[in-house]
Image (tube, rainbow, N blue to C red; front, side, top):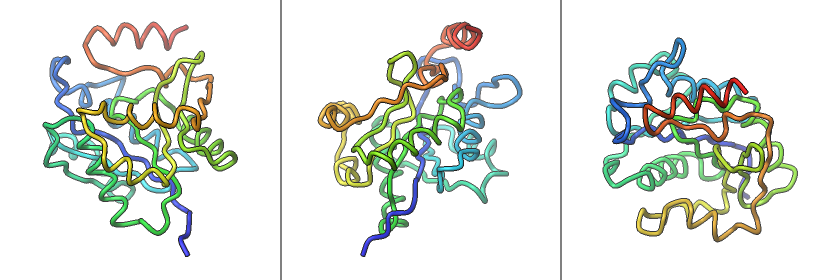
Length: 209
């Protein structure tokens, strides 16, 4: 009998940051790199059991800023990272499924630049999932959807079949839009990310409101 126990977080940290000057995940926000904020927020969640960081571009540099967390996180290298985010999702889920397939309850997917989503957000979406058991739970702010996104383990096979050609995760969120719970939080950080250097001004503005 399958045992549903584990909430696993996948941190997608393999991208090229094409629109940012340098690797955005290594950009120093206050006293830490962006990727460090993201991972530590997840580790400080009381509801996330396993944290897996998917590496690709700048593998060694990202691994280096997280090296002291090795006992708490797992690394996966996506050899196909040039193919886009979908390939990183699949690399992470393949690792998780092979290692924990008999006990996965849900998988949370968080881009590496989700630095401003605090631990409480992860706690909240897991609590909602465990109470309602939907296919998907999405964190939002002022009704605007953001990240992280939680997927019921029932969707693992479908997550493994996504591609950039079919719009990646958007194909799944669209398919299950009527089986999705959008959780409006008090945290504006769930709608913040860092694609260009100018986004830093937006981040500062939103966080000061």
